[in-house]
Image (cartoon, rainbow, N blue to C red; front, side, top):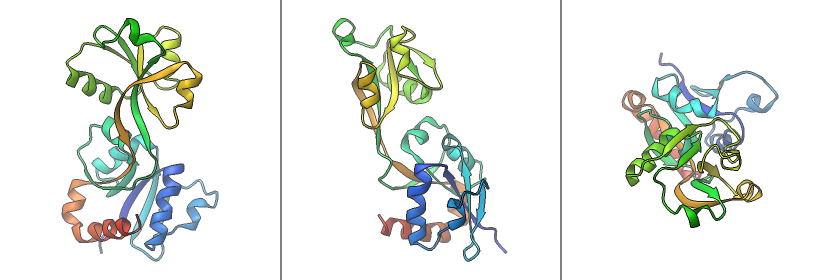
Length: 210
């Protein structure tokens, strides 16, 4: 008897939006939203198990086979170094990954060479500036990214922007958009090979709900 199909979800808004789709294809799980602190949910009527993990860990769980399928933002996927299939764009959770700077900074320093960049998205930033052929110093941060230019820790930041309000309140403006991010379905490569029919069926049903 084959094991359940394991789907990794990040806790929070992406989890809630994803489950709206899964409910429509028969993978609903009321227990998940009953206040339970469980991290693993087995569906009694379907050969499916949901695991709840930290958003940044979804690609890792899928890459190493602890989950067959995962849902994560394109920003999380781009920051990850995991090799995965990305067969479906779910369209929600939209945001932009941008380079931002203090208003007016580019009038004195229009280029990137010799500047410092504060970000939690080190891999994304390194690839972006390497592709431009510019030399920058990247400083790894874990939160309050917008603070870095205000206290002279960094000249600019690479950050995730939804409405732009946080940037505006801190006197920052977007210099350049690196990419637009939405939530994606990711699939383990071995799982796609060994459970192809089952996974393709799930993907097709999800696609029909978009």
